[in-house]
Length: 249
Ligand code: 13P
Image 1 (tube, rainbow, N blue to C red):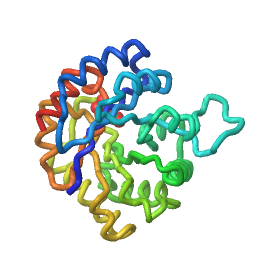
Image 2: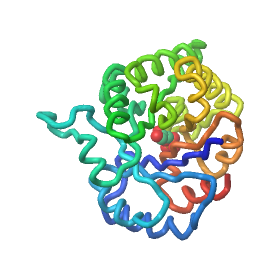
Image 3: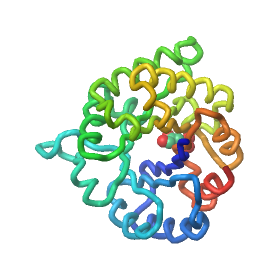
Image 4: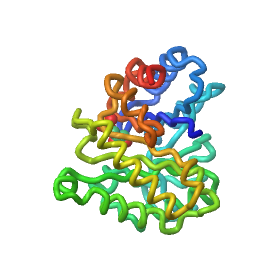
């Protein structure tokens, strides 16, 4: 079965010193949490410190973004090799903040997915509808378009290493969470789409839920059959609430 993946997306929070303090506080709280994979996605500047502080633990390191080119004149960007050198296992791609604020398209995200897979890193592909799209009954259409575009060049032989994060935009940072039923319906749709594309390997793909996940609502969300973990923003900044999601599931 799929071991859930619970990942902290710190977004633009935490310095090097903060990352060290977080790791020191988190590790004893989660002990050797079994049956779950835990990952932390610090900002780029804190990746090396987080790698050092988490060394020897089972907590995986994730990047929040990546550029698909191996190197070149891309001021301000970070390559896959740079992330691999620091021990990153995952990279988040297509986060709604990158789509909405930085104009990232499905075509650009598709390049990232393919480049990560070719390098043996695992993409965490974020998808999700806005409130306007949900209210217009377009949720599945939007998810389908994002999946089709972002996975256009995906390597089917490495499909089982993909992670998809369903993050309804209206639930991100708003305190408004999808109900377990709403989330499960979206996850089941995503699973069905992945089955069409990748066949039986789709059953190995983790589909995380993201959007105001916190200790009070996590267990019920994680109990749904197609919810295989969480991508946690605000509640991941505090080791107490992040660990409570992990151990309380
Ligand atoms: P919040 O948990 O703060 O709503 O953020 C979710 C998210 O965007 C994770 O990537």
